[in-house]
Length: 238
Image (cartoon, rainbow, N blue to C red):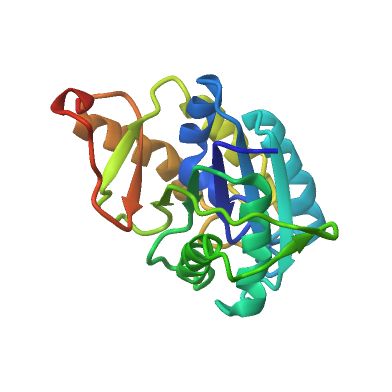
């Protein structure tokens, strides 16, 4: 199965927080989108890996994505090495996405920049013919995504470009709230964490609103890119 877009996150909920409105918009335009989680988020302060499994499935249904997989890497301890790169290469070659969306270049959680570089490196290596991989005992064809974009996470970094997601913010917020063990719940008896506050949950909404304000739309999501953003003509800008 070929995907148009593969969104990858170090933890379940990274994709929802970073770029799920963009995903929802692309799906509405007929694109096939999948999500790959690198870990099960087992080191999270609240909830458990098993709870996150259920929540990620619910979020996937809300977004209407085509497929979601989890590589089960060790939360907090996965590395950017050959072993982990090859596992991601297998997924890239399996789904042959034209665009990969992944974690932020730099962020508060150590897994985010680590996952960002790991995925970026795997996307490049996936296009090398001398790296051979097999899936289900069948040799895979090489594949390199055309673009790799990095969504914004905890830190307020300046995006290289933004996507108008007006009309899709409610889908994003519902997908985020599917992770009820992680985010604001005044009745929760679990320990607090930096992402369990009402301010954090509100910030997901008002960041999109503020980025939209800056570019003259209601809501937007920001991305960083590893190379120049090019347009065919000036009419593509708004």
